[in-house]
Amino acid sequence: MDLPTPQRQHMVLWQHMVQLYAQSISEEDVSTRLLCSKSRVAPVKPITIPRFELCACVLSQLLAKVLHSLTLPIQQIMLSTDSNIVLAWIQRSPEQLKTFIGNRIKIIQRLTKNCQWNHVSSNENPADLISRGLNASDISSKELWWYGPDFLKEELEVNPVDFERITSDSDYLKELI
Image (cartoon, rainbow, N blue to C red; front, side, top):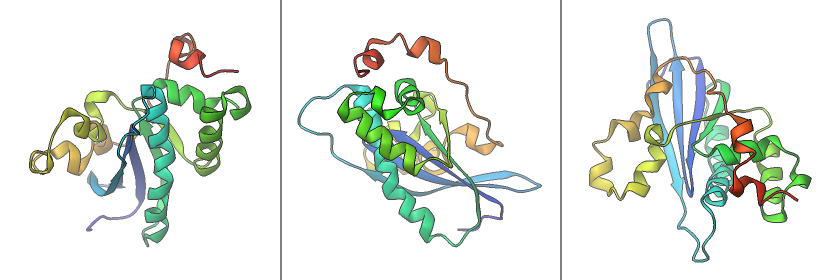
């Protein structure tokens, strides 16, 4: 991959899908490329959408191995999800959450303690393309898939999350102890 330094890595997460993008910022421009993606088949047992989103955040640990194998200098790792509920759970102590959620939050917090989390809207989330029923030939022509969302083409700023609104959501509240 022809990317100038410095490097910033960005993971985009959606349910059982994770994508890893490299973002390079130079004096002239900002460029991004898909490095890899990983998905899992949804479980047979039905679970809530926030729990799906949480599983994608845990799945991101598999892509961490890719980061460690790169010889590029990495200045910052940013993680995005379109689930505000998961972002709010990540802000909590795992002991305040039910076991399923708390165990995964503990893993996420340990693995991403030096990373920055932010929110990505569903229409800007390339991992969401799979859920829209696109097949491989459809995806091959989607710039969103190969180059990531438009905000990656700029120097990133964290999208603020409205935690007050989230903390009243029933899917969020039912996972609290």
